[in-house]
Image (cartoon, rainbow, N blue to C red; front, side, top):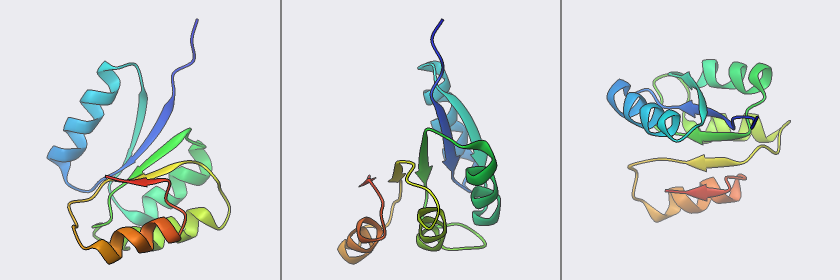
Length: 102
């Protein structure tokens, strides 16, 4: 029996969230969803995911602030998923401890 990899998906757009969740679950991942930054920080602490997929454009807290807070106590891999295309935001996210940016 194999253990499923636990993914915390932080994405406020419900259609994107649903698409990514369906894609991951069909490939054998266990997905927990957060729609806000506050919910994400709470779930990251209590759920202890194997990896975090983080959107930057959240309704309550900017994704970079969520990343900063998670990095203050966790080394879990974080991949930024964002439509933002400014090079400086990518550099900032990686400087703050993101493992990758797509």
